[in-house]
Amino acid sequence: MQPFIADHPLIQHKLSILRRAGTSSKEFRELIQEITELLVYEATRDLPMKTITVETPVAATEAYTIAGRKLAFVPILRAGLGMVNGGLELVPSARVGHIGLYRDPKTLKPVEYYCKLPSDISERDVIVLDPMLATGGSAVDAINQIKKRRPRHIKFMCIIAAPEGLKALQEAHPDVHIYCAALDDHLNEHGYIVPGLGDAGDRIFGTK
Ligand code: PRP
Ligand code: URA
Image (cartoon, rainbow, N blue to C red):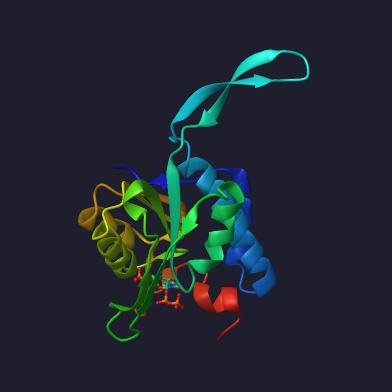
């Protein structure tokens, strides 16, 4: 499945400010939320609808409503937390699960430390949130864990993907549609995306 790579001017403009080294944590968090909202708008394009009748002040009319499809957002801790409010702004009824993973700085392999998913996840469509898809190890591992609980469907959403991570995720989970704001050039020797935006978790939470 081809990934969705955003080319919308609003997303690209916001992404340029996000990448800038001098952008403050406050602005960084706001931009992550805004870009997530725009990506969630795209990722929910296929939600089924049903017709209802609505009384306007002038007349009765047929109108559309979302046909009861349940969603869950699952951020990968920590940096995925920065995307949750963007999702909930657009889909306030969604549930939120959490997967705790960090990347070992030497091996670049994911280390799991937490997993709490909604109890009714088997009835839900899941959108996994993580700003960075670098080697892809964290995303692949998180989706492995989520699949054990048999959700209806899974999408993966990030802000920036590296070609290496995209390939790894597509190979491991060909059924998972990927949404991102940009596909960057490559990974450096430390596993950081180039040009990227640096360490997303540190920039969101001001740790460094
Ligand atoms: C970052 C990022 C992803 C992961 C991507 O998290 O948020 O989860 O790295 O790298 P990968 O594709 O090579 O697995 P990090 O491990 O820095 O943890 P943090 O969010 O707790 O800072
Ligand atoms: N994690 C980040 O936060 N940034 C990268 O560039 C790669 C992994």
